[in-house]
Length: 345
Image: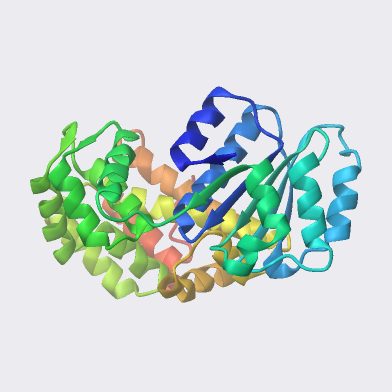
């Protein structure tokens, strides 16, 4: 069953989970969000046990089949995730995928994700079987008028209406990069108080970005460039930017870092984790550095501190939020001078 991303989301809201899902294509944001939506629906149906098989670290297809035929330790439904990435199944994989497409795994749910298929993959029996029998979504970059329309739907998630001219301007700026487009809409929804985001709002955000940008600030912190990060904090403060916005940017990064660190603690290789979380090539050195420096527990402590700063900003705790943001920036950047500065929560 072939669906668009939008039809998949509608189906997941309205119907119980299918047995098998197949998501493929060269657009990473849509692939990630399709899989996330199935995970969320699985949790809503009481499925909290996941079995993940990743081609980047090697898939033992026979072990997968045996695990699928075995009862769960707690006799509950499970979510099986098979992540092919850019690789093709080998060593018995095609046959098992064909069988999964037609039969599924008893009461369990299977999600197969893959990158953009080449001609040989499209002609393979396993691929055709999944396309025919699974709930299938082929993701793709959006071009022309499709991207502004997608941006408008994205803004609606945040309770905002994105004017046509504003959507076209954002689409032009991101040059087809949907992950960057999604981040741009999220930033605009946070920056603009009005229900409607206009072209002038987008232009104002561009002008602000040319000076100091909260996302660039977070990148400077993660890269360990403390001097630049602190200059940006003070520049943003002078421009009247809300402390809440900077703390949100750090908290957003920390939540993702905690999830990545947890995956590493479960035994997943760092390169595979970076790919799973769609870390851009240019950001990989900085993210790698943070994950090598901090454990999951360390990052959870920093996230708790970001939550503390949020209460300070909102008046629930005493203190100067700007000072606290500088301290958190120093700690996350790896500055030795920050040791002992975090207040007891």
